[in-house]
Structure formats: structure tokens, C-alpha cells
Length: 280
Image (cartoon, rainbow, N blue to C red; front, top):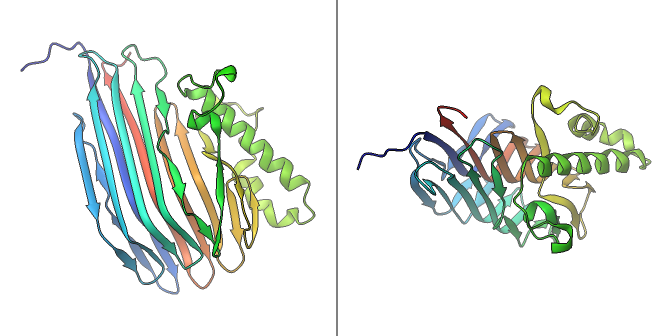
């Protein structure tokens, strides 16, 4: 049936379970398993894979991804969902997890105002680092679990992401300044110091933040916020969000390997973008 809609929404969403590359002791690309993309017209796509073991460096028991998009009404709003699930993750026997879920839901309004975002469903199960179980402390505002008195049940809009990025960057910078070994954290200052409140965000409209405010439990290394550094392993980034005004990406585990194995790998990542034509 021919639609009489005045606007066309072009969907853009993808999800992948595992991926990355190795530089040492050999060069190789980690297979991008269970990776899917949503057609521009929307629809529903899902993919499941069973066990993967990449040269005993990164493995999982199973994984599945799902993306979907549809109009809520003929001329909007338009909804998009991206989900990535990894079960039985193992990275060099140091980072293991029973289950990781990255899920983003975005609703684009009909009149071109700011999209509303939800991370509901995203979580860590049985996360262990160096054999010890750890518990990521999730940001209540971004997870929509804040108190009603704080009005935290409203949709997540761009200002909430910006506020989270400012607050987490401030915590990282202040924590490093108060540490005796702060010289070892210069890389973190360079990575997150630019996300201060004095910076003019309109220049690039980029926000770097995380669903994770901190890590509770015994870690065989150093932690600040969602950052974990393990000697003879590398760095781990938990619940990392990279957001622009019209796109958002969530990766539950990203690792920068710096031991006998050098490279970068990620697990449970989802991404959503989209726009209307003619633009509002």
C-alpha cells in the first residue's frame, strides 16, 4: 500500500558481538562475528552464532544481535532498537563475563527536535577481572533508575549525556590529581580532560561518557570510574558511550591489550543513527 507520509525516515543501526585486531606477536583481524545492519527502510534483522575461539586470545560461548526500526505513526515519531549480547566472554583469561548486553532504543520525533534515548536492558552479568568478581556501578540517570524526586524518569536527551560526560571527566581528572602515582595516568588525562565543562561543545558536538560510574570489588590493578588498568594485560573500558547529536554508540567492554599480545578488541557493541528527509 502506497504511503501518504510527508516525510521519509532513513534508518541506520548496527550491532556486533566481537571484533578487533591483533598487532603482536602476529598481525590478524579478529573476526567480526554476529554483525548485522538495519536496512534504510527499517524492518527487523537478527543473527545468532555459537562458540568462537580466536587463537585463545578472545572467545565466547555464544552471541546474538538484533536491530529493528519502524514508524510509530505515518509521519513519525520513528523508533529504532539495537541489541548485542555476548555470553561466556573470555579475553586472555583476565576479563571474563557470563553475559554482556548492550541495548539502545532511540525515538526520533516527527518535528526534528532532540531524539530520546534509552539504555534499558544494558547490563553486565558475572563480570570477573583477574579471577575476582567485580560489580560495575551504573549511572542511575543514564539507566533511567534514578529517584522520582530527582525527575530521573524523563527520557534521556542530549543534555543528560553532556552532563554525564562532564561529571565523569571531572571525577577522573580530580582522582588523578589526588594520586601519588598520577604520572602513570597521563594517558587518561589526555583521553578525558577535554570533556570539561568549559569546552565549547558545539565545535564538534561530541560526548564521551559511560554507563559505568565506578567498579566495586577487588581488581588486580588500578581503577578510576569506568577505566581499569591491569599490569601485564592492558586497559579495559566498561560501558563506553560515544555520542553525537544524531548518533550514539555503546560498547560494553573495550580492551587495549598491552602485554605479550598487543591489539584492541571489543565485545557487545550497538549503534544507532537516522534522519528524516526532507530534513526538519
